[in-house]
Length: 609
Image (tube, rainbow, N blue to C red; front, side, top):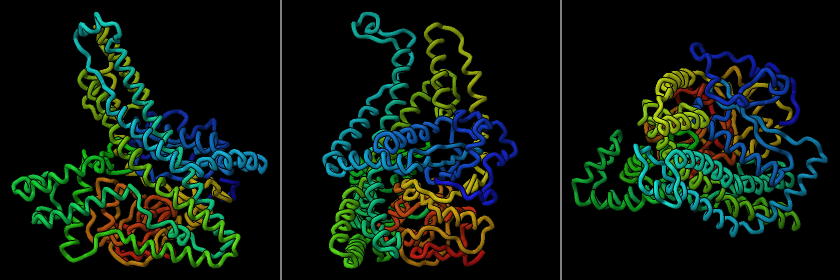
């Protein structure tokens, strides 16, 4: 963020926010460097911070902080130290009452920007010229990483080590193997985030360059039209939902569609299907689909409770029920890909025709590059945020189960109420006392801490965070902040003006069309299955993992997000109107209200209530 307007009154100071009653001491769950500390007040108070509700919509459990530290270490390393993106270094974060606020570190010195541009052009250029080959190698590396994670063993603690340990040549005792496994699990997570951001920034960079060129040559072009020119591209992330649509048609063909009724649990549906030949055939086909497509997550993967569809099939089954109901009503359930492609090509042709020959050649080159790199912007999530992270959280659960078996925790799930460093400390003591036969303090030490933190998170979840804190910036320059989160200079000013509410919310026009309907506000992934056909989804942000419910809803409104956020991309691919980055839709709109969503203008109107 560059400069500041000095508009101290628009957003609260981070140092003026009070702790909700009964939540005193919440800070103990987070690292010292993640807090607004008096020793940094002079700099932190004069910066602009916004709530990253896209990735962290609810208070952060202590262990899950690793999914803030590792990604921000990785994005900063690639953006600032490898590719040297000219206007932006990395992202700082702070925790306020359990919620995550972030602020970009801009580069403002023209000489430094020019210096960084040299690095960026050389290094990014190499990737763009060799994209397909490098991306192919990336796929192999990430799949190997997932395989290594699956193979990682968490040993139990035997009363006596085996003869192999006593007499073998190449041997380690269990204390070492457990500590080695825990350390390796943490490093595998770091490696995944390193892989995650290697290509992502370049995907945004290519698109950002195209946007900049379009706006320079065609000053009146809407952001939405630029985004539509890279829509309708088949990406791997839509494959799981395509398989669900195929399974929905199969259920009707086999005459077992009556089992899929609104409100039934997946287990109930499976039990009924198992009673008939057609049902068993359908279940056999489902088993074939599960690998790899049910490695989707129920959310963004960044919290430990976002399970895969394999562990929690509620989202795919809610989608199947919706698809079958739509098919039986004679409705179309396919993504309108051909229509999107026709509109994409029409816009590219019309805008290209407005340019002279030289500019048109550059336009076509930049558009071509954007289309080549675009699939990665979504596909990396399937491998990293879903397939890897859901299995990684399960691997950490194995360490939780080990601690629980020895009384350090009451339940294996309690491990997520401890920081990764506290878990390391607990394992150290467990292995020390197992080795020596001494009496551990852990069973008396950790359970009260866990209970207190569970209570804190529950109470903090009832607090409503402001969309932004600190100083209103003169300009927002970080390309990732703009494209992913939709935090632009204009959007921030809009948030500041909307502090007092009103009947209209303004955001980014993410996907065209105007629709009126009943709003359904979703605050957590557990509420997704409650959405009914024809409702308008209102949420902090969406994940591509929610794609299957997009055949049920009429439109989407989010608190945060830009034209290249996942909500915006998915809505365009499903042909649904969307307004993203409103700042406060979930706090101002109530479930059951009638609203109008104008995805062409970026306006949401509250029509009643």
